[in-house]
Image (cartoon, rainbow, N blue to C red):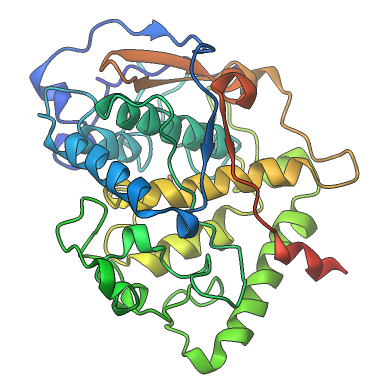
Length: 351
Ligand code: C2O
């Protein structure tokens, strides 16, 4: 059976993960999500390619989100706690047939849940700056190009304190997070998928790039050869846990989390409290689409009805609760966003 849309009120451990709004107001009944086909089609840009006007707009939007009171389901705290609520043994069902907490990692729910989480985050930001064309950036960490500013350092928009970007120092940016890994603040601080505790020196840059590209190739192309191998194992109502992580979930997804911020991003609990979380997951979401375009005709979305009919509950841009199905999450065309085209140089690792 599929999971029904959870009631967010069924949260354990108020201190850690329940969204603060739950202690203030009883949730009103959710409405069913409808595609907003009247919206302009949004193109999510590569974070290392955006201009200053874009950065200013994005900063303003997150500033406004952080300024919302916790009585508003769209507030930054309510939003990041939603990620925490959906994992780590916090959210329960009243349903006798499912006495276990819901977990949106380590199964086929991983991609669609995170897609929707990022989707509503983006729609809320767009509403807060009254700009329906607003699209979140993606952190193109798989782009191993040797030119600066390349994708595999922390993009300028999130790293205002780095000396590389001394021309735009803004320590009060709403997108800055002071708990990030010091290595992520260095101009040459390059992410290593294999060894996230390390801070590769410039001298080893080409080695690290090659190893990152190889790891990406192995996960996306080598391991992810069928829908379940890529997405993760089945997870249905009544299952105690998911059937295992998909190809990219541990490496590079998990190791990028670990590398960029060893305080927040490394835990399920706090990771969405660093704004870079959303650009990281936008890139995961983009790679999901890239994966589907690979040759062979076997890389498709999961078509099991228990997967398609599983539903989640989120806050939409109006602050009300909506329920959304996995089937809806798969219709990118109707969600009306796509990604700026970039090179995927790691694909050459198969040549
Ligand atoms: Cu819910 Cu990148 O994790």
